[in-house]
Length: 375
Image (cartoon, rainbow, N blue to C red; front, side, top):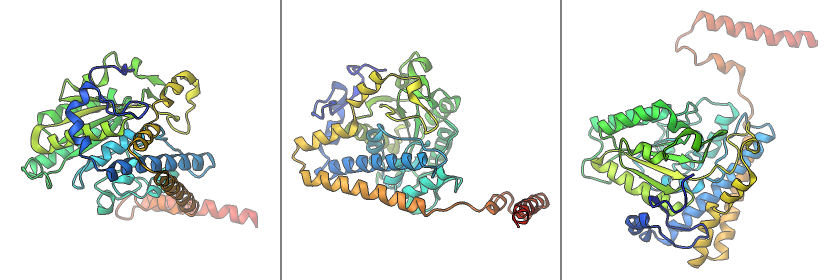
């Protein structure tokens, strides 16, 4: 774990919500100071909605409604800050835990549920404008960093970036974790991104654990220094939504302007399990969890807003909205039903295939045999 007094750490809000920028945060204060109150409150609203959705999805999985759920509990600030720093024309490549990133870009949260329920292979249509250029989740660790870099190279070749028109120039942001950062794919993506000056931000959420393997075992070097071998790399407090927003905004602006890729390591913590198939009590201590509870990103931002005069009515409205979101997700999830077995044969080949037809007929006969036996 990087010590809280690391001179490279960009942090604007202390754990108690007070405005206490670190020296490394000084270049970013202008960005934060320009934020209106409405944007600051939206950041908090996004995080509250994210946590309510995450808890509801976890409950639904425990009740047998989902095959699996990867919680985002504790990582809300890193995700909200970075997602709110993107522009409409940017392209998002999530891993599999960036639920609020996707919903901020326009993805229906129930489309994420459909994916984790096993009703669809990819969840949503990335080409549909309503989904905000958000690509599907990728469960193969690190593979999507190559997809993102390849897409960014296409932006360079097609002249869709670095034109001098910030409102039109496009960029790519890819999310991955500390475990994925050890994959060869990530380093290969960084080599090509740097060589072709791809307009890309590599956003690493260091939540301290690659399932049960701690970061200290994965790397003897701070992860942001690994990336610094390829491109400018920034270390940010990922539980500080303002710092996450500011460093991502500047990195994306620089990437769109033709300055090449940027890397960000957001120091955060996975407060929940890796997925609902995991039991973190087997490999980490309650003392460690408690130390990160004291740095809860929602508590921090709430205290900051209260100090600026946000009313009790605002927080009550946020709580009501978050509860309504969770209730809506539960209602629509329970109405999803199951996927017809016939669908497994529908998308194997574009044209009819005799082997698939044989297998379809075999399954139909097999299922019919149960009906015959019952009669």
